[in-house]
Length: 241
Image 1: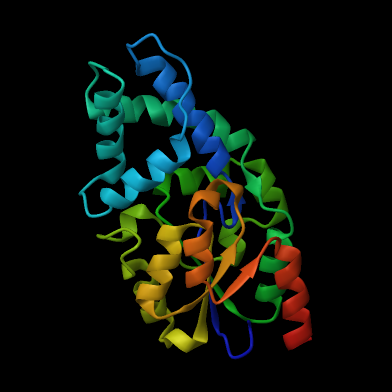
Image 2 (image 1 turned 135 degrees about the vertical axis):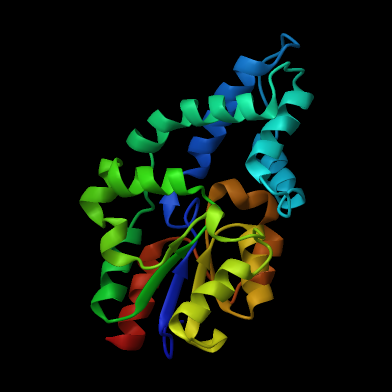
């Protein structure tokens, strides 16, 4: 898994941190506030969002477009921009207090860093959310502060095309002058695994329950699969000592 690798690239949401469920909570609250049909509940929310974001990956502002889709779906009179602002306001408290590293992820990060490997984050998460994790989320800051271990940290704003386009991964390789075979990607979602495959880089599928609907496809694209970062730590110690 790690033998011959120089650059380790991590996705953020659902991969490095437990946050996908938080975004479900955010969107459930958002939909409850904007819907006009008098109904409750949002079955299939995760699958709906993932599919829509894949569809909108080439849009100039996919998240505003996604909020416009929610407005149309649930009969809101708010503009996409207004819904997007509301989504951001709802999310702040969740991102500061609830989001945390996945179990043992911070340990792996420290071990990789100590062995001299270059670590990067390549995510479609917005920069302002990354900044919350960097400067205001105590769970992350007290375990493995992002700025201490990752450089570069590429967010949604740093790529003109979102995953499954490989642009952000190609940028990381260019930063380090690395070849695909010298890199390794950790991803949780089908979109991320497709981007890794499109970049020609081996990838580890990190289990996340919110990606179960795409599990078969994810596993088919993965070079390795782990249920826990403890497995990756054991492999690192076996391969590199």
